[in-house]
Structures are given as C-alpha cells and as structure tokens.
Image (tube, rainbow, N blue to C red; front, side, top):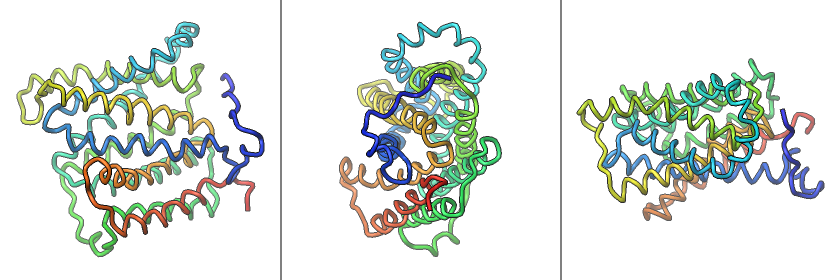
Length: 317
C-alpha cells in the first residue's frame, strides 16, 4: 500500500498528547461534528423523503462531489478498481445501505434515546473485533477509557436520570438499530483489515458508488410499494436535506473516519462516536434553539477524559 503523507506539522507537534499527531486529534474532534448533522437530517427527513431514497441520493451525490477531487487518482489507478470490487461492494452494503437506510427505518418506531443507547455498543463491538481480527489489543487503561466514555454517553442520553435505564422499553425499530450497530462494527474492522491501493478519498468514492448502486433497486421498490413513509416529496427542502446529508455526515464524516483509522487504528477511532450526542446537543442549540443542560456538561466531563485514556499509545504509562 502507498504510505500516507506525513503530517504537515513540526515533529514536536506530532507527539502532542498520547503519541497521536495534532492532525489526528483534529480529525477526532471534527469527525463527530460532521456526523451530528445527521441528527438534524433524521428529524427532518421522514416528512419529505423515504429512507432508501435518501440513502441513494446522499451517497450518489457524495460520490460525485468526492470524485471531483479523486478523479486523477481513480484514472491513474483504474486497473486496480476491478480487483477491489467485492470489497467495495461489501463495504457499500454495510456502510451506505444498512447504516444509511436502516437507521431511518428504525427511527419510525423507536426513540432517539434507544437509538443512542444501542449505537453506544458499536465502539465496544469494534474494539472486540479489532482485537480478534486486527490484533489491536487495548491495555487496561484504554479499556477504562472506553468504559468512561460509554458511561458519559449514557449519562447524556438518559439526561442524568440513571433510574430510567430500568424503564427502557425495546420495540421493533430497535432491531433495525441493532443491525446498524453491528454493521458499523463490521464495516470499521473490514475497512482496516482489507488493504487498498487507493487513498481514503478515492476508496470512499468507490465504496459510495457501490453502496448507491446496491441501494437503488431497493429505493425503487420502496417507492412503488405505496406504503406509508415510502414516498418522496420533491422540493427545495428535500434537496437541502439530501445536500446536507451528502456533504457532512456522508462525505466529510466518512472520509475523516477512514483517514483516522489508517492513522490510529479501528478501536481507538471508534471512540469518536461517543462525542456525537454532545455535538448534536450543541448543534440543536445553535440551529433549533433547544436548551443545553447540566447533564450535557457532566457527560462531556466524563467522555473527554475517557477518550483521552483510550487514545493513549501502548508505550505510554
């Protein structure tokens, strides 16, 4: 595989915090910010666009936008595309179809709290998968960081009322979300396990194309079914939803995530998921006027040290 370019930062900065470069830390902070836009998309989309149609449109548009920048590499390495076709198709099914459409299907019958709680298992699944298949074994302090971040996330989701966990009820929609959480773990491990001749940008274009092509027949069947919630109302709002989803949680978040994986590994990269609810709360405050609460601050005070511990390199004490 071609080596990644060196960080454009001085060597002194490259050892900033836990052996992780300054550039990687910026990706850790930026990735969940891009993903948090999907919370707004998920709230707006059901009234305007069907789940599979949204998945097709967001990833088709994302592939076009990213291909503008990746075209020279794709053209130069076009003889490698056929060799990686099955990997790209499998990753497209996992990351663009299941994680792109199933979450909207599940959101029809389950609560946002249930979605966040179930998705909180993804980093744990990824850490276990990375240990088994990638030999990325976490140390005790790193597992402590994972557990701290998980506790902070749960604190935010249940709004600091821990007794609510015993009152949580699971419905059919939760099954869709469980599928998403498992699919994301498999996607993350496979993305790291399967080597590629392409840069993260060019590879994401190929995966997005495969995911959109695989989902397109399902979107057409969905539209022809006539079922409730399967129709799309085309208009400016719909196109803004698609554009926002294509630029931020699709192009930006997935590209940053795959780049970060190459730099620090699958298990540590997965922890950026725990920052999602904090970013979503801030975005809802800015865009929708929803208030921030003390449990957001408490959750952040638990999550951030957890991510710091989990991100430490093995040779640090």
